Image (cartoon, rainbow, N blue to C red; front, side, top):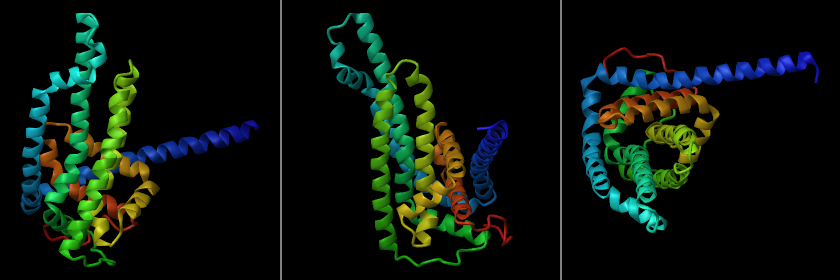
Length: 275
């Protein structure tokens, strides 16, 4: 390969990297735009907070229970250290306890969205519909009966929760690997969580178009950096105490904007009345 070909390949690689980075930050910006929409509309904020608050109370009880029993759980998963010296046994169990709490936090963030969307399906359907109307509506909208919509949401939520658990467990085990578990695994976990959140939060707009989970994944894969940017931003904000509850309406609004982006629909204001 000649110098000119090497330079051309390097230029293409740099252009692709720059484009991916631009899309990633544009995706993160969709959450900010969603937040701006709900802050300007108390109606949207109120619609989204109620189911998120209910789910938040359920998850808070689960987290408190995990913290209360983390020592017993850490001892159970490190049975092999029972005969070790007190120092090494204690060290291993401290690491195990931290990993259990980390896994619990990751699974909480991943499953909180699915559970909240299921609890508040009619509320989030309304929020998403108002956002769609503001940006030009849904030309190919399909009326889905409420029971059918709830049934599909339940199936999709269960599948995504199951996938979250399947992906979370290997990350939990990898967290025990020295150095890698404290550096690579958190980054990988954030990327996985971001992708799953992007898939979950685009469910309502895709269902409105009678598109299934596989259609959603395919559309998001075509704009992966954009979807990851949005999902990782949501994940980071959901890690903040009460962030998942307070930002859920903004995440739903941002997920609707992401859906319109990946489907090639306008995301600039078409109707100006307040949401």
